[in-house]
Length: 199
Image 1 (cartoon, rainbow, N blue to C red):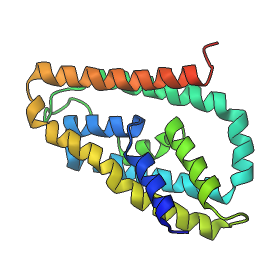
Image 2: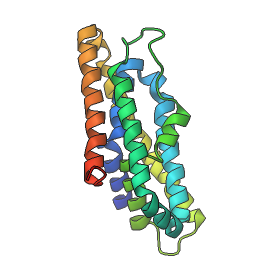
Image 3: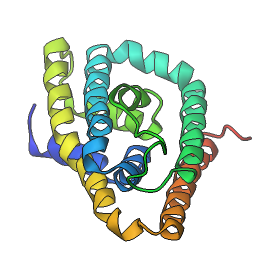
Image 4: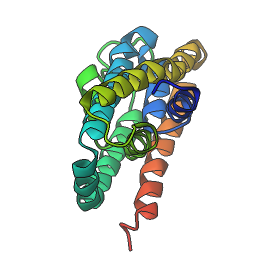
C-alpha cells in the first residue's frame, strides 16, 4: 500500500494552495510557527481520521456524502467566509490580545467541511485502498496520509512565519491580511459556483 504514486498524490494535494494552507500561511504571519503547530497537527490528524473513517466505511460514506454534499459545501463555504472576515481583522504580529490561532480541535474538525479535503480523502480511498480492504488497511493508509501531509502543510506555516519580520509595519500587515482574506473568500465563492448552489 505504501507506494510512490500514493505518496506523490498525498504530497501534491497537501502542498498545493487550498483553505488549510492559506490559513496556515496567515497564522504563521500573525502568530508565528510555534503557535501555529496545534493548527498544523489538527489538520494532519483530522485528515488521517477522515481517511480512516472514509476508507473503512467507503460504500456507506459515498452514499451519505452524495446526499449531504450541498449541505457540506454550504457549511464549509460559510466557515471559509467567516475565516476570511476573521483574517481581514487580524492584528499585529506579537501583539497581545489580538486573537488566537486556530487550535488543534478546530483545525481537525474543519477537515469535515473542507471541500478540498473531501476531494483528497475520497480520491485516496478510491484509488489506493485495495478492493475489499478492511479497517486495518484503512488505518495504515490514514497514518501514511497524516505523516506525508504534515511536512507539506508545515511549509505554508513556515513561509508565513518567515514573512513576520517583513510585515511588522501595520500597513503591510493589513494588506497581507486583506489579501489572504480575499483569497479565502474567493475560494469559498468559487466552490459555491462550481457546485451550482447559486443557480
